[in-house]
Image (tube, rainbow, N blue to C red):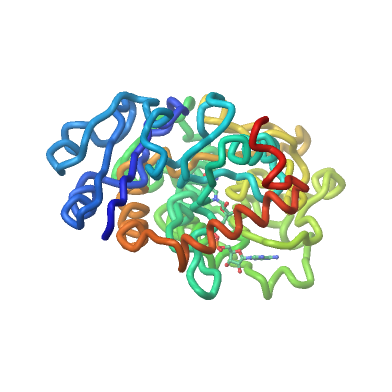
Length: 351
Ligand SMILES: NC(=O)c1ccc[n+]([C@@H]2O[C@H](COP(=O)([O-])OP(=O)(O)OC[C@H]3O[C@@H](n4cnc5c(N)ncnc54)[C@H](O)[C@@H]3O)[C@@H](O)[C@H]2O)c1
């Protein structure tokens, strides 16, 4: 491998304890000849000493802004608001290609600085399958929180925990439960099914085939629904406000793992803002009650397990970091997103 310098940045979000590269995988990168600088970070689930022992260089939190220009900055969630122009290549989840709020300003920052977004959500193989994703743990957590809330056992505010502790809480809560997982064959769907299994519930599973001719009445018959659908084209909503007002509705707890609120691809246009760790549950209807959980950083609640899985999937891709293949597709997708927003890449360099 030639001269690759990766820079693992500190996460701006204070609740974000995950990392895309764990120390044991950092050691593999260093062994392969990659220079890996790791920013000190008070909340990261692994200590900076563990990265130092793996042979990484250490830097201050936020110092990526003055990293050498060829450095590739690696992170997970949003960048800080400064600097206005982004000069580096950044690997992270930009959430900027589905016209989400804040998408255009972020892309403009890249164009202003001459940098590029290599969005982890679009790191895909030849057939378009995601190569590194947190979906399994998102689904696991989403279903787990929904069950605990439904059974009156959710402890608020939420804190990062371990799978052992979470499973103990799920196992201790008991009771009959009719649950539905939509998107059941995907990563999040599998995670949701696993958590429901630990909670002693056998969910109804819907994927593409079962929603082609959507039976909303059947959906409303379930007490708890977990939506884990990933769609790339607009489809009719699974629920509307009118459905929530159905007097016979049995649905009491809705967990939207997808959290596509604000996007034209949103399949649950029945709420307008996500929930969070401080207030994980929002009441959407009083009679009969319907509560929503829509947390957009679910896997952060299991930082150790989620980081280990993600890092294991990302490592081979970082080892083959280069112009073509998955990273080339990421770059193409960035340029495509800029064009779709009408941003001409020549015009915005001095914004
Ligand atoms: N809330 C969080 O913290 C968090 C974290 C990670 C991922 N996510 C989100 O979770 C969602 C799922 O991610 P994933 O990795 O599981 O994706 P995935 O591609 O592995 O699975 C998505 C599933 O949805 C199914 N699907 C697509 N259209 C459908 C339809 N119309 N009806 C029924 N099923 C349909 C697909 O067939 C697939 O099985 C994504 O929107 C992702 O952004 C959320």
